[in-house]
Length: 178
Image (tube, rainbow, N blue to C red; front, side, top):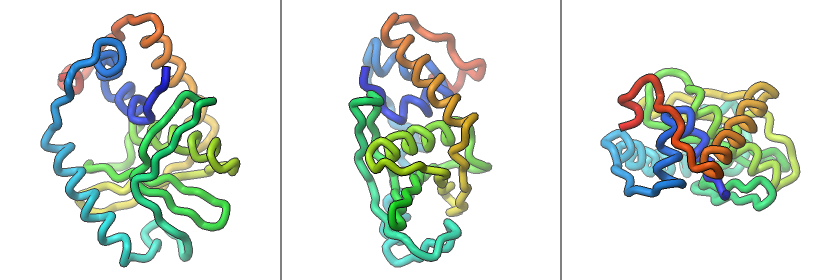
């Protein structure tokens, strides 16, 4: 099945979200946090046109927003919040309405985008960034071997769940699965 990069994030947050999205589809309810994140993301994208890339530790580069990516080989697609290009180098950027450092679900999502960028451009992606709103803090995330391995394992688990149509267990933090 064609997976979305956001499925990687959802699997870590609550595996049942993937079940309800792919196996037994139901409508999604947009939370307050999701609405606020989208509004602040749009504002940040507008401001980014006038900003430098200093927050990312970069002196040069070009920025693209809402970049659609697809790989038939990987069976993966997604829309990246922001892409920084510098020559042949590509850095994925995800914008999140959250506090604290980049969590595992955010890192998995970045790694999924890194795989898509590597498939599209044929260049390795060594790291990406998570911009945390509301304070515009930037976390650099290494796309290293352990994260890549976990990303492939998560993709395999997603496919097994969808192929076998078996509902996964809920996250121990049940509130995440509401």
